[in-house]
Length: 475
View 1 (tube, rainbow, N blue to C red):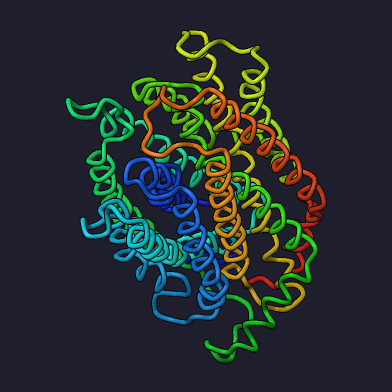
View 2: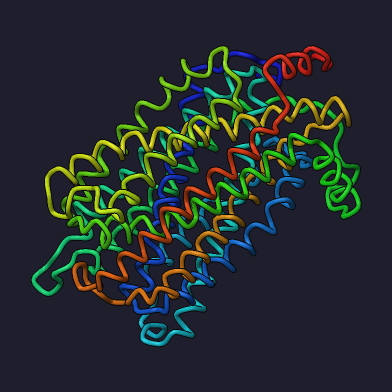
């Protein structure tokens, strides 16, 4: 059984670890369209829909540090992480299914539909916590090598991206298609329901593959643990210790800023591509294909690109490039310097940019997550504890809270510009579309620039990490 000092990650371990990206990709894809589904298709006020998603994410995020602390200090025949991984399987798949299948008695009235969305989304988010935090915590357990950690995470992120964008392709090519009764495929309620059933099955299979496949890779536990599993004082002490480390504060702050931008970006992506650029569902299904290819290229690209480079610099480069690729076309359209809607030039430009946008965003995410895993040895040197779970929980806490903020912000902004509900593409007034581009482009760019500045303050370098590993006791 491998220990936490192992350096080389086997192909088997990489494969099963990467399989967790299947569930993560399906869940993440759902976040792109859930606001559209509840506001445009089911008729819920977009501000109320955004509020429901925001509250659900905050409830979930509050549980993150607790799950991280518990998984760090749990002792069982299945190890520290697997009890929580196994517990997440059924509620995760079931809540995702129910999110897309609201019963008829909650439809037609904002209040019950709001309550239903809040309940389903909250259960989904908490279940995601039970899976994702222990999964990410295993990175620092499976290897202490600076580059191998990036290799693990790039494998996970590759599958995540392929599935997330693959689900988008299926949504527009298979499920959200026009019918005799529905002219605009985006308004096809049955398509969302079919996608929800398919996604729930994929989520269940993915979490089982990850959990069972990595069962024999559970490392020997090293470091001190809490004397009592449920002890609030010890929980607070470990959280305070974590945030006394400067690099942890930087990584979390950068994550909050980044995922606030991603939350707004994710929600408004569908609006931008469907209403601003006026792509048909058939065109959207094709535009997603290069994004899928971006995920395929990520792993081999990152394995080579990270060599002899600092993770901080790699992450900043990825985000700067993604920002430019994402907002420049919108800005140029607002200035009437971009091809008109419906032209082949516009389609092929956005098709190409989608590939690079995907790769650059993933480069940032892999670098960001990998930077957090290197804090493990710093904590162990100072406290004697290995707090991988608490570290990963702070990352997901930042991600979920900030995504909720961004989602809520997107809903409010859509309400402020009076973006109409239950309105087909082509029927939105031109001045409303101009305002949509105006709040989208500059807002996303500003948020990501702030994130890059914050991340530049991270201080654990390649040599610093190597020194930390050398000074730790080895089994």
